[in-house]
Amino acid sequence: MREYLKKLTERGDIRSIRKPVDPEFELAGLTLLSQQRDDAAVMFNSVTGTNMPVATNLYGSRQRLCEIVGADDGNFCQRWSELHRQLKTSVANKYREVVSGKDRISGKLSDLPLITYFEKDAGPYFTSAVFMAKHPDTGIHNLSFHRSMYVDNDELRVRLGSSHDLYHYYKAAEARNEPLAAALLLGTSPELFVSACASLSAEEDELQMAAIIKGSTVSMASCETIDLMFPTDTEIVIEGYFLPDTLKPEGPFGEFMGYYVPVGDNHVFKVSHVSWRREPVFHSIVCGTAEDMYPLDYTTAARIYAYLCDQLPGIVNVACHPFLMNTVVQIRQEYEGHARKVLLAAVAAHMDYSKTCIVVDDDVNIYDLNDVWWAYLSRGRADTRAQILKDIPGFYRDDNKDHWGRLLIDATKPFHRRDDFERKQIPGMDAMKLDDYL
Image (cartoon, rainbow, N blue to C red; front, top):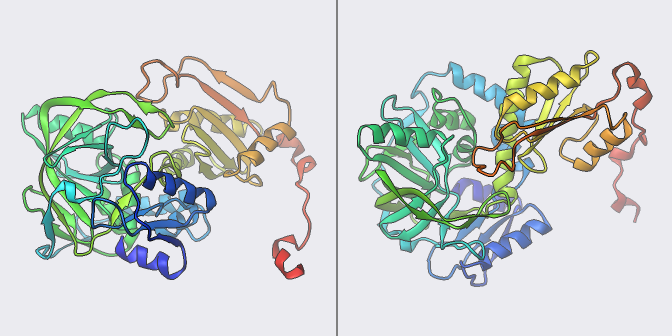
């Protein structure tokens, strides 16, 4: 992350805040205010209660995320599919290099920035930590995000969703009546961060994927108290164990949907060691903001894109915008009814998030819902191009069935009348700059 921060600073993509900031609410509030102005990253140089600066909104930019994976044309999904193909043909452990990590400084959790984000949060949370663990049977690495409530220097309480790979790792260890060793990585390289956002198959190593995105080896060092290795460029590492058959109250917490999740019994992580690089920088994410949602949007869309490309022709791009529950698919129509087939396939591609699915032509901006909705309203009838699928389960954490059902919308041009819907254009406008005329 340190090299990435240097790069953002050199090109003026980071906003520096030097006045002292309270980690309770004030830091989160200023992050949101900064995001409302533009997509610059933010560096808080003086945070009360800690000696560590805090970086936020590092990944709250679609352009920067595309740069990280090498999507020069802005099509993250297509580039991710290329990287995923490389993963499938890569040699295990080819991208790892073992080095010494003895120059790190040891400390305790309370030395870190303890940030409380929202009014009714139970207390400070670690929101940006990448959990790294190895499957007890296969040894495959999983990288994933899970909200972690600070209790004291020895304990975190962590939400492990039942659909997540780390939960299955935990259950495999629990079946042996063993704790599951894991490390929380705070302030990782951008390549590892993006890899952790993705949902790969259980047989695929997400640490390996990070190395493929990076295009070079990942230097690793041994943890002090657990049988794991960590990337040496990680700013802060929290080592410990998930206790088997142990749940304790966690929450409430302001989650990504914009509401508070209530208190619930969740998993207990016992901290065994905390270390950091010299002059560390802490990474913070305000849940539900662009930095939280854009990486999830891209990696979820990439999964849907890959599925659709395996099933049907003409898939150009996919976006889960402006919220994960909405999937927009961009296609080049090849036959009458093409869009309707894509709609049905998109529902099957990701059962958690595709609550609404909209298919558009390749002249529509899938990241602009105004443009998407304009296409639906201007390119055909309202009554025959929308379909409701009733009583289909959706998001896995939904006891009240609020996310059941699907809405499918065909916003494409009528296939045999496509020429009637050519978008008007002003020649040369793309090259014009208003400031040159003022």
